[in-house]
Length: 116
Figure (cartoon, rainbow, N blue to C red):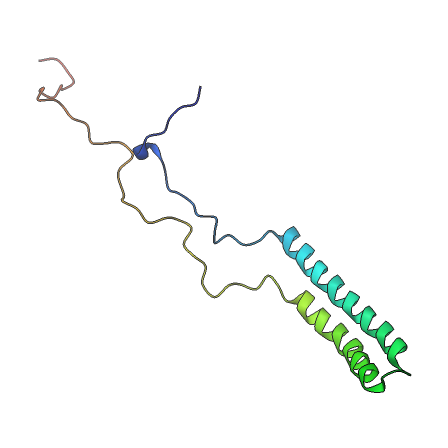
């Protein structure tokens, strides 16, 4: 049976919206961007060959794209895991209450140790 938690039972609440992406996800994303850039470069090199006798101006443009894209792809792929300028707080601000309320004696006299 599931236990219902009261509001005063909860400890500090951690926010995960400011958490960084895992290293594996970051590497996978950078690899994906690199592969896409190299795919575009390959298409531009093929277009250069196909357009060389048809439209020399477009052939030169695709050739320039094919020459510049490897540099851009490497720079983009290596850009990652920098520290963000400001990391949000990991704790939500809220009212601070003690874990246990102060003991209430209920008007009874305090018991002292030892014989009377």
